[in-house]
Length: 380
Image (tube, rainbow, N blue to C red):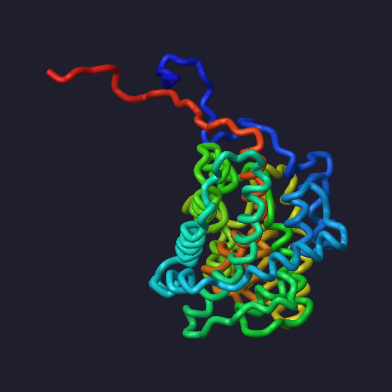
């Protein structure tokens, strides 16, 4: 089909704002309760009662697992946590000056190149094709993220433990020990909250790539590339940069006034989907409060509250999930540049769920555009 010409009356929706391109059964936002729902379950309920493994199973299978199903699922994931030597070698070959998202993107490509059945093939059953690869990526991403942070500090790799749940093992591989329960729980909550969010930029990227019948690893590396941007996943890093710039709560209002006067975008606030505040924020804010108390860092919450109140007073814009997750990850001990890879390690479950859904009723995603260049012309 040819492109639309400049005379077309078509309405242009920049950024595809408000454009509905497909249906999904994976997640939605209930406007009446302002709740993000995973397969119908409010995410705040899942964060309160479920492990990350249970949520991953739900996203892929459509229902929460029974006891036997969960035990089998956990055994499969735990058996695939260790990095292959060539994946570790690829990480070692990347300079530590590179962003951790570049490392993650490259490592996923290496994992994909190693898979002898990496192509989608005939796709008689998209779930059967994608599900094992999705589970493998879920198991591998924590090892990649943890090892990359450690090597930047001159620390050796910590091997995974198969006696720990997903969140505990992730922290163990990063810090060499399992922290106190309050820290593990806050980290688990963040993973659950970040796992899925419908047709966001990175998920849509994954679906576009899958629609071409490429392969799941290409879809996920593309999603990682989209997530890296500060207008998407990189926002949680930017929140911590803002906190570092402000310093203390008493300077928040002046910092914000100066930033708004220079038309600077304030990261960690606003969301295209939510009109009455991000439904995930109260849950993550509670976890941040628990961490502040645990580490005896009241100044963190004072700064958080001061900037939040100032932003509400001046612009009426409320925080999104990145606002409480940034300082929470900082208190846990993660490097600021590692925040977005943590997001990716959670969201890979949602990405792959969408790849399965896309392939189950696939149509090549190929929008049109309105041409605005020179009229037809010819070489003399």
